[in-house]
Image (cartoon, rainbow, N blue to C red; front, side, top):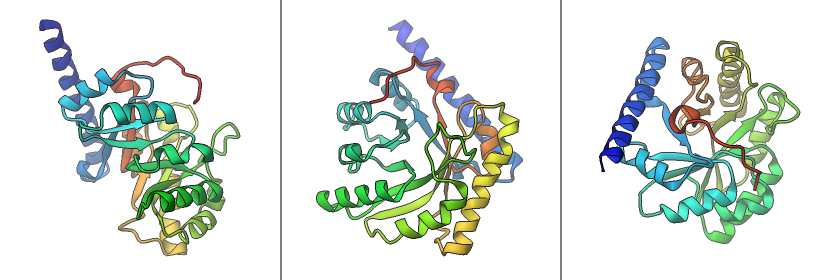
Length: 243
């Protein structure tokens, strides 16, 4: 019992520290920290860890692997959690998460969007909230739409009536945080471009999912509205074979 109390106290202090860092970064940028959502990335971590963080105030969690997403969703469906899908999504796996994810961060092709539309129709879902994933560093090993094709993809997806495009997501190159600033700024500028050139509603197309444990402060300074934090909360994780 004493050990559990100590663990909970440690988590409380950790969450306080992270929120303080979010507040500080927002303040530097002249922003309200309430504009920034913290998504705790719980991939490969046990449900006990998720429950513990939920008890100390976290509500939004992100998963990368479809089977793990579904398993945790089912195990924790009575806890009132908000689930984000943030990993690579194959078309044949869409049906398993489309009615469970609050937000799908990784739509990077019209074909994937069409499959989400198809499954939404089958399941009677009025709207599925998505982000367009942008390959902001143009890295061949990463998913995402080319930055020059974002407007074109937005226009095509916006014709699908069961999808609501809520913004953009990126996974920048793995380099030191300060050097990532131009990549985060580019995503911010792309959002403005889609609003200006494609007529996106700024009240709906408002999310920028960018920034992870190593660089979330820089991302917030550059306009992030969602930060995806795993290691800083849960500690290092073992690599897992993609599902």
